[in-house]
Length: 410
Image (cartoon, rainbow, N blue to C red; front, top):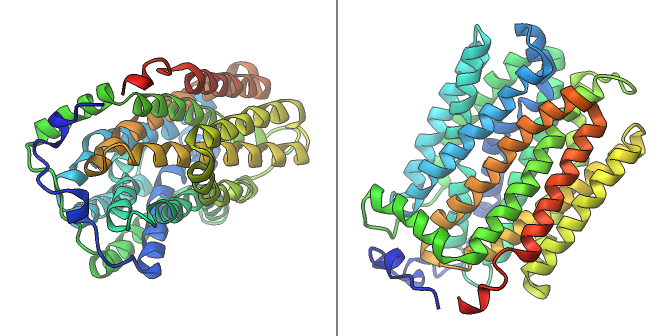
């Protein structure tokens, strides 16, 4: 058995004492799902806009792709240093503070007179857009044990729809009003969300009473103690790297031969990935019935198939569409199954467990953006597909072999 004394010494309340007795209302679940979607969109608005931003500032494709990388690095920093506070501070107040600050830096990005200013603003956009990773553990806490998987799946569906629709919306708005309007409108959306959540979101009292230093130290303890957490982090990081390789470079591919699409059409390809959002609840149910390993394995196989299809048939619209569907279903399905597994490890530390997992996840995404941009510059589309396939293969190896021999001792 894992010794959790160092993790629970300052946690005076049990899960049963902090959980709500009454079921969560459907309205609250939907509000949390929509909130996740609106906030996470801040991170992905820039992906269909990279070519236009590059033209504004006279930047090369590989240089302007740093905007996407900077945002993901910022999100990773927010996950690492802000999200753990969800176990220590009252979550509603923390969420509202983050949203106000997100609105401010979105405004800075809309105004940015130079590329360095936009790059710095992009980092802070990522930091202050970590709100979904506070809302998801909050939903897990507020839900009853019987409904937890279903509710977390619904909230995650909102997040996934936000990721996908953000590209569609930003591409359309940029084509008609310019890329700066995308960031400005996103900032206004954050302020409107603050007004709604201030009234509708319930308070969720923390259970950790230690210092911030001890809170952060416990992240190391959690990572060391739980092999399934480390495996989930590795698998998630590699899969999200493959996901970022594709989505960071897709705009460059679609704006050249053989497609020659503009940003509004590029953005609409995000709608194709909506299948990933549909897979979220199904993945949760599959993990409940067949086990997380089974659901994660299916997701990895789908992601492997996607890059084969994209590499062979990406120059044909049907091949591109099928590849996008397989990639989004595979990556998002595995992601939900990974989160279902880690939330069951230590209920009173869900924000911190999520921090460890999601920090690794977005480190993978940041690496994928950089590597994807380099692969596009050097080898174009075949290089992008090869690198994406390599990351999925690494995810397969991590899921198949990492820490398996040590698990029976846990």
